[in-house]
Amino acid sequence: MGFTPAGQIADYEDTGWRTAELKLVYDIPGLDGARLATGARFERYEMNFNIYNSDNFRAGTKRGLSNRSGGETSLSALFAQLHWELNPHWHLALGGRYEAWKSRNGYYSNDDAATPAFELEQVPGTEKEKFSPKFSLGYQFTGDWRLDYSLAKAYRFPIVEELFSQYRAYNSISEANPELQPEDGLHHNLMLERTLDQGYIRLNVFQENIDDVIESQSTILPGGVSIRTFIPVDEVETRGVELIANAHDALVENLDIRFNLAYTDAKVARNAPDPSLEGNAYPRMPKWRANLLATYRPTERWTLGGNVQYTSNSFGRLDNTDDASNVYGAQDSYTRIGLKTTYQLNERISLGAGIDNLTDAMDYVAHPWPGRTFYTHISYDL
Image (cartoon, rainbow, N blue to C red; front, side, top):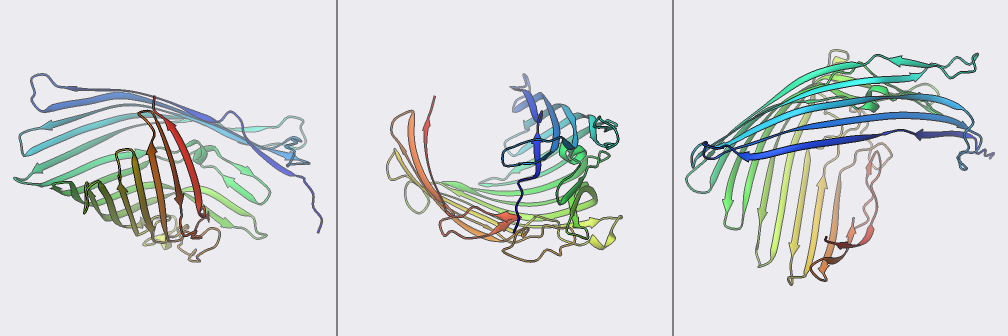
């Protein structure tokens, strides 16, 4: 069978991000039990994605542009949250976040082979302003029980890849969607907590409804070429319950145990462009997840740890047709066991070693999860 090193080279050139945040927390004078947290945040993201033709991709030889796409986004935010212990039983939290988001300088390839220049199509920029309020009210019962209810509005703005990443490579096509709207979510959570002598048990019941959920969708064209684009789903509804238990000196002295178990039911509630998807499970949202972490300290310097992680299987596609297991593209269930030990040599230096995926289980999440992995580390505390 013949082989040629000719192909393509993908290059993310001036691609990256910058973030900055300033936060101030202080007690409000004259208002007992009241604390205010306020601040500002700035984020800037840039993508410049070039695909070059190459007569030897192994050597990294570039022989002219094949595709270009990119753009920028920025987000400026102001936020504040008041937490107020009204009395020994009632506590209140009120918050808000103002966000100003922009996309600009977007472009993608529109080359005319008859001209010497490599032509680009400019994408108009957009601006959005959103305000996200938050409310939480809690009651501390006489004794060890506590009940909290929280309600919040939240937005998720499109990222540069979803807006601007557009290319045609060897066997795949990606179509950007610069007109994407921010995801718009309403989130509820009811928490019941019992304090224990050496820890706590917590139960969360939650529901969220998110409009205009940005989802990467793909299909296979005749000839085996895949095409991907970002199309919003009108509404995704998620309901679930989570149990959390943390205990110190559990069963025996110096043994700490952390456990959580969550059931999540996420489904497509509305989708006017394709109503056949309504009622389907939302991709990459397993119904069951559980984690158990145990840490034992034989001495003050020596720590032993073990963990078990479980996740049920899920779908990777909105149409829920990808039900095969143990293949590329699958979203398999898995049970993974890990072991770890750490020894503190002195106040600043510690050594550690561990094993991830002890049983060497082979499971897939689009690609295979790593098999049995051994690792060591050394850390120095400044």
